[in-house]
Every structure is written in C-alpha cells, then in structure tokens.
Image (cartoon, rainbow, N blue to C red; front, side, top):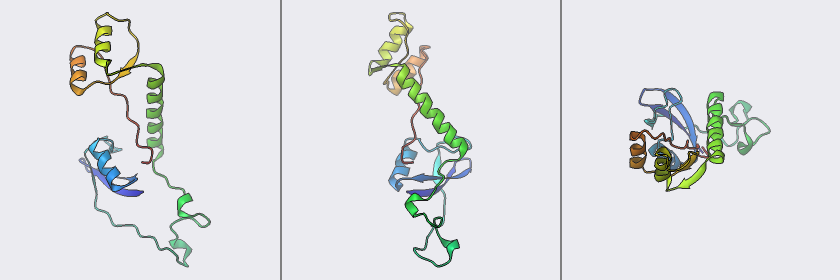
Length: 155
C-alpha cells in the first residue's frame, strides 16, 4: 500500500492510500479520486517526503507499530468518520438499486423509451447506455442516472 499526499485544483490538501502507483493513476483517470472538501476530481500528487521506518531500534518511541503488534496487524485509519459514513451510504444505495430493479442490459435505452411512451408498463430498470444514448434520453425528458460506483475494495 502507498500513502499519497494529494491536492485538488482548489488547493485542498488530503491523503489517501492506494494499492500501487498504477492503481492511483487508473483511479484518477476514471475520476474515482475525489477531494473530500469540494468533490473535485482534478486531483494530483503533492510533493511529500518519504516516510522511513527503522527495522529495529532500542528506543520504543521510534517503533512504527505499537508494541506487541506487527506491521500487518497494526490499526490503520484510512477514512475519517464522515468518509466512512458516505461510503456506507453508497454501498447501501447501490445494493438497493441492484436488488429492487430489473437488469435489462444493453436494451436499457429502448426499454426506458418504451416505458416513457406508454408502450410498456413502468417499472424500475437498470442497464447499460452509451453517453450519447443517456444524453438523448435526458433531452427527451426521460429520467436516467448512473449507478453509483463503489470505491475499489483495496483503496
């Protein structure tokens, strides 16, 4: 795991953990890294000094982990309470959507349009639509929204 100091376009500084440097790059490219203050997805790495830990040292104050714990079992706080609650809400919302809607797959634009035009009875559906299809549905007054994405499990 790698801990990066990050900064958004508004200058808000924050930190986050990533499995690898490549995982950070992929998540930023997909717009999954958000500033906790302003929700901007324009996030970059800030300049930071590396954290070095001595393997063995007699002075207990220099231990990287609490006495009696190894590095793998040390308690690490990755999210503050607000971030943890927001993540739980996203999980709950996504779970509710997945359990209470019918998956129509790639037929989503056609099914949504037919329901809007009265050709099919209304029901809660989910599926896949291109950006162009979603924009066309919205332009025609058909309400759609993206399924909330879950944070990567190892982030």
